[in-house]
Image (cartoon, rainbow, N blue to C red; front, side):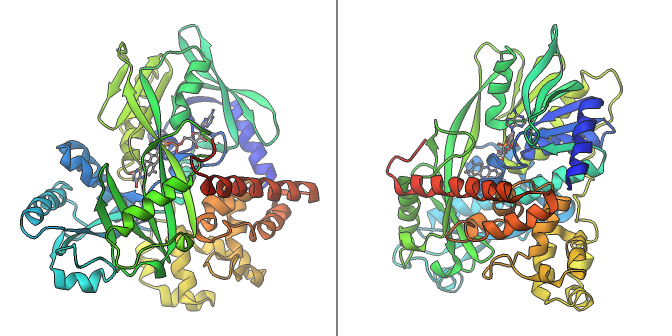
Amino acid sequence: MNISSREAIVEKLASTEFDVLVIGGGVTGVGAALDAATRGLKVALIEANDFACGTSSRSSKLIHGGLRYLEQYDFKLVREALKERELMVSRTAPHLVSPVSFLFPLHEGVKERGYVGAGLALYDALRGKERVLPLHKHISSRKMREVAPDLRRDILKGGILYYDAQVDDARHTMTIARTAERFGATVANQVEAVELIRDGGRVIGAKVCDRESGKEFHIKSATTVLAAGIWNSKIQEGAGINHGYDIAMSKGVHIVLPKSAISLKTGVILKTALSVLFVIPWKEFWIVGTTDTQWTGSKEQPLANREDIDYIIEQANQVLLHPLKHSDVISVYAGIRPLVAPMEASSTTKISREHVVDHPLEGLISVAGGKYTTYRIMARDAIDAAASDLLKIVPKSCTEEIVLLGADGYQASLNNVGGLAAAHNVPREVILHLLSRYGSIFEEVLESAKIDASLLERIDPNLPYLRAEIRYAVTHEKALHVSDVLMRRTRIAIEVRDRGLSAAPGVAQMMASLLGWGSAKIEQEITEYEALVEREFLAEASIGGLV
Ligand SMILES: Cc1cc2nc3c(=O)[nH]c(=O)nc-3n(C[C@H](O)[C@H](O)[C@H](O)COP(=O)(O)OP(=O)(O)OC[C@H]3O[C@@H](n4cnc5c(N)ncnc54)[C@H](O)[C@@H]3O)c2cc1C
């Protein structure tokens, strides 16, 4: 994205009359934009900051049915999520969503094995006809030594292995936004909805601010879909509109560890007193979490504190042969769950157990809650509600058939890694790395390296990201700030101990040449990134944390 093409997008936002304006570029909002665009509607999507900068880059990164909902007998929800899981792995996003195995360790031989085994048999059965992931299987104590050498054999009596899937949430969300754009949506980050515009009892768009230029303008739209997660109520209240649900904020923290810290050949799920703890394989790392505590601080930058980290380490250490130490921790991240609850007197709200679609005024729909896995369902429900306010026939949602950018031809590229490596004169690992992030369009990333071979160098010597990816993030993925590249286009911020501080100046220099930054702007970008990281470090060292 160069400056002039962004200006053209902003100009289009200001001058077009849209069918649907989506506010919020988390997974729900980008999903809604894709759903609406593929129904033939004229769509605008605005994100106040960067795509996925809210909860959608801070999840456990699992595409799953949610075993704990089985215990609550919520079979409908589990079935729905499992169907989405199979769909993403097999058709819509196989390059970004991949299977991952989890071991459910058992403390007791017969009764617990029967109970958990029955639950996992049901979990397997609920996914319906399309069955891509393997079925669960029982693991004896002896076999445990092989698959999970670091689990304590004195208290564990074997386990059960089952499958779910995982995703790089921030990349996936951004890829949905790009796919929506490909189907005609007008998409911009750093454009904030400041106020909803009303014409009597109808919402007819929003007053917005382009945060890059500071310019304010109106976006006119027949319907507006509020998909701003924990920010929904603020925007609605600003326009004096009552909403049919309340959003409570619950913080969840994860720690990232090097693979060498735990010897396991699979992920692990552990039951805790209140919920579950996941040990999730993540490239050359483990992600371990999560917590569940009330959060009343900044929505923009939720922060972990020392107690959060202590809790996670303590829970994991209950079953680990070689206890984790604080010094093992590479990084920490926190996210906020938007927990929705109905307002008592509301007649406008359609509550399902997980997400809520509210239609408080003509022309305004708000959608919140749910989970990452079911974003497509939330998006479909929100656009169904918007369609009822449009004076035209709107086709049914077809996103079940829409593959994300990079999915088409992905398997064929994967089957030919050797050939592609030879054709591009790069090692196989480079092709595999690029395929897992861009799918079949990976060659677009390598294009710039044909002219400048130094772009094949790594950003950080210990991580696989190439310098060409910084360039591509700016030219094709709408990265506008150093934090966009380090925190979301790549995941350097959670994969190195300094959270990307040493990479920041190089990233800024490279972005500067593409975005026309002078030395003052470069300095400002680096300083702002340092301040973000500094706040994380301070909070993590403190008991109680910063707000
Ligand atoms: C710790 C944790 C772990 C989780 N793990 C999982 C998991 O493993 N699997 C799973 O399925 N789900 C998981 N979830 C849930 C999942 O992450 C969320 O349900 C999902 O990301 C919510 O997406 P969203 O788009 O609704 O909200 P968000 O991602 O928060 O997006 C809202 C967006 O709106 C933007 N915005 C705000 N105000 C404005 C404005 N005025 N104008 C324009 N834009 C605005 C924000 O900047 C933000 O980008 C987890 C959640 C947490 C907190």
